[in-house]
Length: 399
Image (cartoon, rainbow, N blue to C red; front, side, top):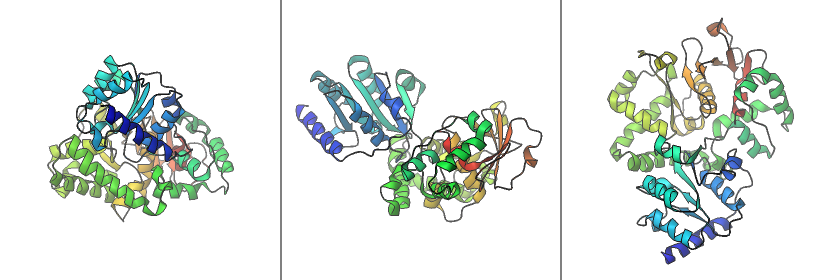
């Protein structure tokens, strides 16, 4: 075990010496000041979990601290508890455990660490893994890291700071907020930056290599499908082609056109299996599964809405993209982190069982939501809104 610890310390030094980005994502302060003995961070591949945890680790003054990644072969045949126990006995105060889902029985291992060892632990895991099970998340402090918001993308692109706003603030003061944001832009052209974000802005690695960005998204999709899902939920490799076919069909369809019956026929997947696959892809943050508002109360024979997780996935999966679907996908991707979203019979979405939203272009009117209380139009190609008509881009400032 001594030799393994020495190897792990050497790898940590090599990782640390590579340097870290100066930019810190919005969860940084919460993670840094977490009082929990064990703090977990989960999210899709490529959203910056490793970088964020290394930034947190760098800030701690503990003399004996360590970073390990469980996807390294040296940890394949080792008890995680035994390793952390050994590190703790020799003065270890803080350890960051990356890719914890690579450990087969990680739930049991982390529970043993929590119950018996006096050491502070941060760990990261893939969203494809059920690390948010109530029994698991009740014991530890769990944080979800989503894709970049438009606000974060602008901060990274322009090296400027922008404030995030609650949904209630946007609804009540959107004209004032939009003017402040546009005035803070060097070129005052928010729609230009919004278009770039829609195409290429949701994963931080865009700023590492712009030319290979779409290739890396495709590689990430394949890794999620062929590694994460195959290993975690035991889907056979040949079934993965059915998942890719499912993603492609969602990519080229309008959300309301997708009934599960039609989708099952189109993909050659039975309905019960299709439900299972949709669950897996949603958990892996490749899909958003939005149900009809009335399904909360009774069984309604209404088709569900299925969206790709974010707008950048369209460029990696299909050529022909529907602008209406892109707009709705952006809206869902920016709100799902902190809000409950259903689709509605009047308007496109019901948010938090209170607010009705219709999504469209700048000329979109209120005909479809006329008479609805707390109803709003989220309009694309609009810089500044008025009344209950709000620029679509502004919903990228919720976190």
